[in-house]
Length: 319
Image 1 (cartoon, rainbow, N blue to C red):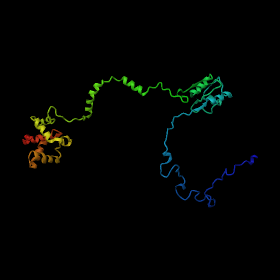
Image 2: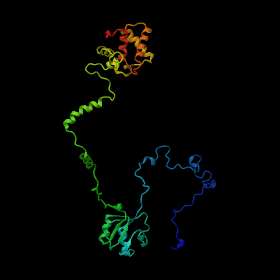
Image 3: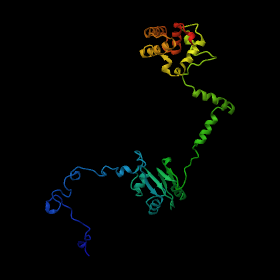
Image 4: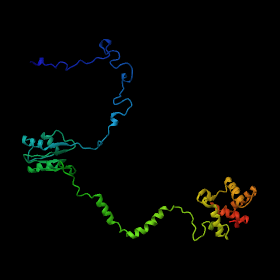
């Protein structure tokens, strides 16, 4: 066989498909793209589109990230280093850094630094200055009475299966123990138990406490005495009981003199049923008179309001 007789096997090569060259070629007119449609147009890129369903590149989970400041090291194995020593590319008496290794033809380029990896035996001593090295590689060079100077101490790598040295790190448990030791001594358990109910009561109590009766004195006696210094606690207490649960409602607890509907309710209810006044106009005038009397008080409580209505009618004895 001669050089001019060399050729590819049958079927290994194909003629280039010539499209758009007339109907006789079989690929004329539409050029194999079919009739109309998105895929027949130029400038259309629908790679990865799956008809609207969630595409594969979105269904698959993503892991990790590409660090923008990541460094790429040129790796030099112990085997390749040993071959270079035996071939005479490296002199045992010379110090070699990345640039010197490139010049000697041991590696092609330095990249972001040279990293010495692997393990084994080195036949001759050699002095290396590298960016990083594994412990096994350092041990192999030093066994041959050579030396490895790591320029970046953070790039000394652990051997295979070797765990990270955490002796200098403080665990969370130790930190917690140190914090407890530094904190002041806690109170005895008996004191804690005694303080617990108080704390629970403080939590349950609202921030803004309602006025409470002390020693049988009504909480509404003091505001009532601002308008009647001789107000009787017994009468005030009876009016309070008369109003009952309505005082628990904030809206019902106070009287709004600007709300005509509420004043009419007082006329129809308290003035008619309790005071016995059927004349609505007369009752309304008396209610408005009490409103004027209590004008200095912004929040007019209903107990004091009813007390003054009963007092003006001379019917405090009804309670």
